[in-house]
Image (cartoon, rainbow, N blue to C red; front, side, top):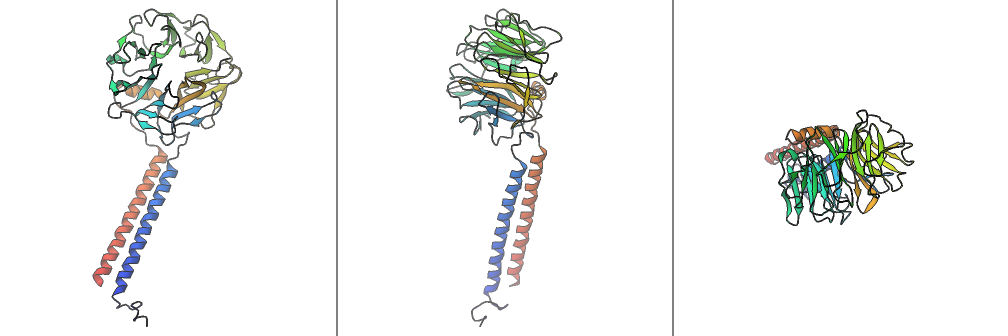
Length: 409
């Protein structure tokens, strides 16, 4: 009876085809299972862990709480961020591997002009009206207008660039090179050295005073200098003590005559553009921390500081400082702070897994920063490769079995 229906007999012609069909189904399910497992393992091995990667982080309450603004990027070094004054959701971010842009406040990012701009991007700026954007990379300085990104004409000593800021006019930009200051009067197309400032050993910070007629503040050889005429003449900025070297200088978002600085492990403030300085609160918890960014509330009660030891915040005018660790990297260097020009409470902070000094040194040596291979990523890649290998061997084994079964019948 079983033979009459064509099943169950070893001599039945349809049996080999039925067995082969079952083997093909098993092979397909095995391949699908292996692919799912590989994706699962790879995903688990590469989370956006704030302790394992650098990146861009955003606060909407002047540093009280933070969320990452670069989901899925896994950046080694986020170096700088600029916010479009016309559209706060439009961001440009400089990284160790190029320039990125976001049109939705950091929820998604795309590479900008990767065939033109490559290498570490240390500086990015928008013009006051938002129509122009300029970035400085290890491969040169570039300007974006309606025609896209085009290379600017800059002296060789302007690359790599420490800082890039827009002047009060929409066609003026200032660029801080390795040991010289440059200015552009044509919307970032060309740059020339500012004549009033001699070459110094090291320039580390540059700021323009909002609403002013070309008032500049710079940090040169760990001391401050101020110019009131666009760099044609300079005077000492009042912070030149050998025992208190200046790390950085920053303008106030609300009071145009107020500037902030970090010197000798503590924050200082001037309400008269550097003529007089006053210490603020107590020194930072880490005396050797190198400060890179300063932001303050209008009443100076809330202070936010980024440094190579992370981010610190004070809610009592600097009397006490607390490290910010929730959702932020706890052992990585924090870079510059970028403030939304349309909302002073919105702050962007950058973190770098690779030390900034190393990224800068590599840029000076004129070679691209090599991408780091993290242990978790390496483990995920090895697991994925192993599963693919097993799946390939299994498929090959089943294929041979099928061929042997067909040849025997």
